[in-house]
Length: 520
Ligand code: NAP
Image 1 (cartoon, rainbow, N blue to C red):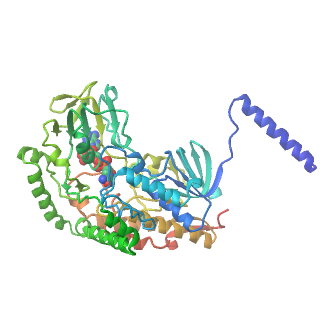
Image 2: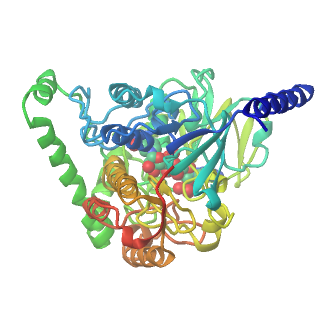
Image 3: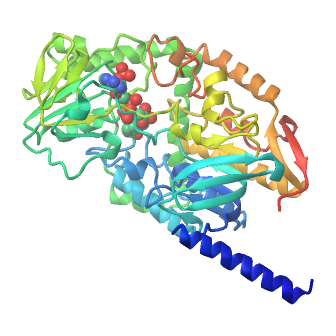
């Protein structure tokens, strides 16, 4: 057949296919968009990865972001009082220090603005696909690539990076009747800014890191505030202050000054790992200090007793606030420690039979950390989802990054990378070092796929669990979201953050199965 005839035949075939599609009034399927690296999520972690790719001179990558802007948790958490409890000079990228931080612990808006500026500085806009939700990602062994379905069509990628974070999927409590509540009800991470709480009766459910910022921030404007506490939290003071103009000028113009300040903060925080992760007995004096402070802040002994935790300090995240405890001194603020049994149209009912009328309910009830819904959307070599694998064997992972059966997939902020004492950005940058070296190694050695060996993963996880068994998170006597449904701590890193930096400095290819042929 001549080339002309063949082209005619192809044209007819295409026209018929178009005809069939229009008969069904379906748009013709777009061919998948192909990229070498695909990052899911444009939060702190996804952004750090994208910047690193740019700095390496790689251009064949995309970042899929279900929101309309970068920032992840800092974009989503706009609740009153939202701020970081890690000092800003440390809670910022090492390659993008910000001499302009207005205070030692910056608020959400300032951090979000910083992240937008950094994304702009590295000209990442063309690499982002916003309002794009990942529906599924499937490893296709035959083609050694990932096929990704999204709300904006299909993508195909050689390497998949999970930058979807741990604190992005709000956990909604399953309280009977909550669906029939007539007033406003929303999660702290999805604050309803159309709901005017001024002069209203408001219930806040939960007393974690989000709630202890929300409660003091809204107390003065609401008519009545009920705080529903399931477990009391340990609270320490927050050394927050505005930076003077001189300090900001010094950070900007005095060579090395800001790095020095940052290092000082880093090492002061790093030292806390000695007590939290190595010798929990050292947390006892910290608990005594917290108790002494509570005596000053909460004169009423009965109230103080109810606000005092019954587990070792540090077992759950230690919260920082100068205002939370004293908020309960106000007459219109009530601490409720009975469990919630039911929500009615206009009220909250507790186990002791009491019913309190409310106009709005704020659910400061945390996130799906160990059971992220995204795990159910990632399908590995044998067709099982990551959720199914984790259900079976627990959240086992190699260096918080790679998982057996999931070739060419790298998680950021994966299992056991959480810190109770230092900046998560340090951990993220460590993982990005590892990821970048993996990608470079694959290019250099002409590898088509890398998959961590099950034995390497098993050894790594067992060693971690042994170390974790001695930490305050495991021996402190509390139930927390650090533990998964198997009771294993698959959230925290049991040591110094620089130890994690060391083991992620280079890609250790010997721990991986590889296939050759090079990326297409
Ligand atoms: P969280 O620490 O998980 O706290 C959730 C709170 O809701 C806990 O008090 C929990 O009680 C309670 N709760 C959950 N389900 C409940 C139910 N069904 N009924 C009654 N109470 C319920 O969540 P978060 O406060 O949003 O903080 C999550 C993490 O985000 C923090 O650990 C931190 O890493 C990060 N964060 C950081 C900052 C900051 O930098 N300042 C601010 C906010 C969040 P139990 O303790 O009994 O489970």
